[in-house]
Structure formats: structure tokens, C-alpha cells
Image 1 (cartoon, rainbow, N blue to C red):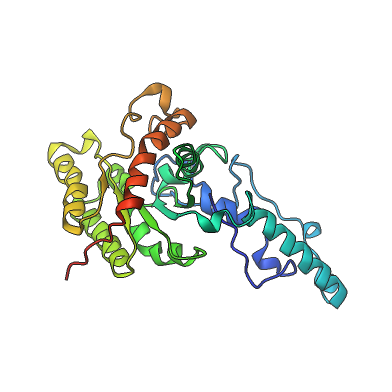
Image 2 (cartoon, rainbow, N blue to C red; image 1 turned 180 degrees about the vertical axis):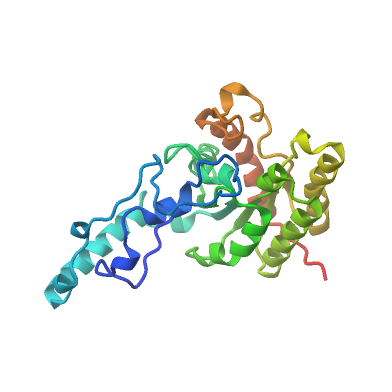
Length: 289
């Protein structure tokens, strides 16, 4: 799930409470499949693709915020909304569950799918069904490459309510689609694993396979990235995030690349025992000098 992070700003801080911007920022991205050159998240878009419009009538005026009584009432409303958003289940249940950060691209973010049907919520449901409920934080950004994930890793970790029990690193699809040099993608993933190792955070590395259009040499070099890094850092590896889903017409969206809801459900069901194994193994990446 994507957490609501309360801040010290109250309902009167117009710049930090524009409706819909947090969910849009954290969930869905550019309509370009897998991140064309213009790919990236669009904070002003809802999950259904419609634009978010902010009317001045939806926000209290600064004059209204001046009264201590009004400020107190608005503060109570804000606290109530925070309680509703942070605790969708039984009181305190989330604090007793493992916290997982899923660092990825559109496959993690839930590109093209309604809220609740992306990989993160479906993985949470699969873990629940397996008797191992966990709180999964969506750090997927549509169009992101390994370089983008490396650049925003500290930001993603800093947005969590506490240190995660596991970080799922699922990046590289856009590198392969764009033909980015395998050595460059490997270096970025290596740096991500080094950073997580220095922070003492357990990791599950989730791999990607290169498309055939770049030729056999490229594909051989790219596909070797993930097994090599998993061995070097001694972390568990799921070799291919789209295993059993890629190239299956009934399981992908019309673009032929992104899984549909049924495809994501299959992904989540397959990944759930892998994630449980990684939670139990608690393998922190070995840091290499």
C-alpha cells in the first residue's frame, strides 16, 4: 500500500495538501509504456487518467485559518483524516507487520491499472492469503531506469515510517527496452545494493530479461547482470519478474508489455513465497570495497 505520511503541516498549508497529488505521484506514470524518453510520473494525474484540478473553494482561506478556534477544529479534522488513512485495518495492525519497500518501475507502480489492482496491493493480498501479512510500500515510478532508482533510493527510504524489514529491488526493464549499456545498468544496481548493505537492510533482487531486438550479445550481457550481482552480494534472487506472464496475450495490456490485473495477480501469487523466503532469510547485501 502507499502510506499517508502525516507532516507538521495542517489543513491550512495549501502547498502541501493539494488533493490527489500524493497518490498520483506515488502510483501511476506516463502513458508511454515502460518509459519512453518522456516517461515519468505526472503528479497531476489520477489513477483513471483524469486531471486533478484544485479549486480554491476546496481549501480553507488563510483568513479562516487565523482563528485559534478554527485552527483547533481544522487540526482535529486533519488528525481524524490521518487516522483513517494510516489505519485502514485494526488499530495498530500495521505496526506489527513486516514493512517492505518495493523499489521499481511501472511494473511495481501498477501502470494502467485501477488503484488496488497493481502489484503492491496484490502482493499484500497474496501475503495475507499465505498467512504472512505485510505492509508493502509502493516505491515504483513508471519509466524509471536503474539510474533513476539509484538517485531516489535515499528519498524512498526516508519516506518510510521506520526501517524496512525487506527491500525489493525490481529495476532494469526500462534499461533493457532503451538499450542502455548492460555495464551501466549493472553499476547502478551494484550501487543500490551497496547502499542497502551499508544501511543493514535485507534485500530481494528481482531480475529482468532483455528483449531480443538488441541482438544476442546484448541479451547475453544484460541477462547475466542479476545472477552475478546476487552471487556477489549474497542476496536472494527472483530471476524474472514477468515469469509466466510475459508474451501471454490474456495476461497483458493492449501495449503488449504491461501486465493486466489478471497478470499482476499471477505475478503476486508467484512472488509471495519468494518474498516470504527473503523475509525469513534476512540477507543483507555484502558491501564490496
